[in-house]
Length: 499
Image (tube, rainbow, N blue to C red; front, side, top):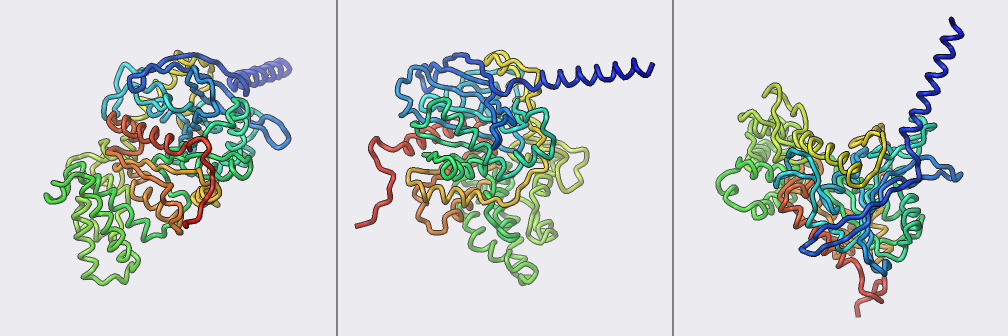
């Protein structure tokens, strides 16, 4: 009896192993389809390639396969002049799905004009895609989308190879090198775009590609950037949230009449100036701030945030984001979203100091998840039994030694061609718009690079492109940036002295 049980057990383990291998599909395979989309009134034919390309270790052994989707405009004979955009999302642990099927690609998911889910779920043409001016590849890091490490690798090895600021940048740079070589795109102008955690990723990649792979880029696009490793300190960190709070309060009509009567972008400069010139110096004084001044500061914060002076004093002038999302509409029984404060949530209790859940993320997963699974199988013809990881297991993530802002500065200093575009939503509370401006101010203390940096704001949140009006303008800003950052033929990459 024991012998029969042992045989059954061994057979079961064998079948489980075979099934696991079958799920984790080949690390080097692709499928190609073709399509057409009308962009700005012009039909654009394209080829779409999706599949996996390997990641190798130093011994030349395959350790992972990264799933990607590559769109190339058809009929381009000279690809040396054709820009290539390499796109990443963030998390860390998030797939490239967000910008792939909602922002820059030829197809976008079906949502309403403000970004809310619609049924039946589906995909439609993106009339604002940047595919008319650039080819685009969307890359999923390990454990996101369909990307996976080899089955023999345990969690410790995966963390060592993939899950950290530096690890992530190193292996993705090697993957990009291979991709550019395979696709014969070394001569093309090249751009990286990253959203959220994708912004430290592409900032670090700019230097890693340049110094370890000798690949020089033309542009970096930072969508809803994180802090990029720039030290803020507790006072600046707390104060810098005020402009975002003011924008959200304005949206919900919680400001005094004189402020509410102004347009958003006319009102915010006053709040930004107050933050830099008065609030930060006051915050620096901490508990030694004179009481009369503290009362004045609390009253001004209340004026800009729509919160009561009482709760501001109770928090010693430092309003936590979670509390703001809970408090602003507490009397109406709603919470506001973290990554896009236009979204409303409802909690079990009105009491408490933070929302029960992220209203905006729940809404986004509702619309994106069925769309990407449908699109991969029915449009791109990619067949697999692997689960598409919208968010995959990548934690604990090693956040030590995050020097990505400095990496980007060095890359720009070494490469006169390299330019930066920042895009931010005014209602994003996760990676707020004012801190994205602060990044640019602090990244280059010399001020010598500021003419190669640009910033754009939008009346939406973290994924500004979900709002139809911002989808059009933000893609146009990328289109203009690519054209500006692609030098004229024969223009040398050099610095010149003033005569």
